Length: 168
Image (cartoon, rainbow, N blue to C red):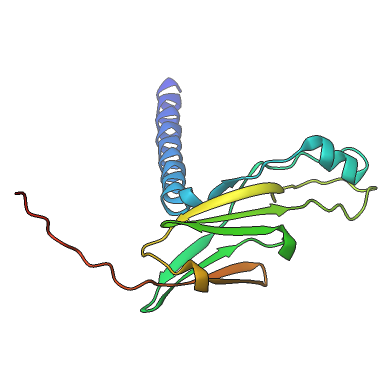
């Protein structure tokens, strides 16, 4: 009986070790692929509660804003998935080789007589910084927002020439 319990304990220990490995691997994958997409949403609690006329459910403060940066011959195209934002709530800025996307996703409660059982979407003000792989012409940049995807098109500036500088 004691030997049987020891074997069961070893088996459980092995299975827990495997489960922990899989969980750790999943978190490493998530962080390596999406670490930059993890975005903080800041809220003014007093304003939100006043706007909604009462108690709010507990809202997440973090969310993933999945995106991609594509470089073509003449432009860089940045796409970021951010559903549920109004056109007037965007601010898009290029400063040097960084693109800054700032917005506000507002919480709108459909019914005040309901209870939320799952709340995974984050609301509030957020900012995402995206490094650009090339210098861009900010005067010709354009952005549009359709089907929950922000698309920023940034024409490339001419190739910067490298120069070797010799010591005198």
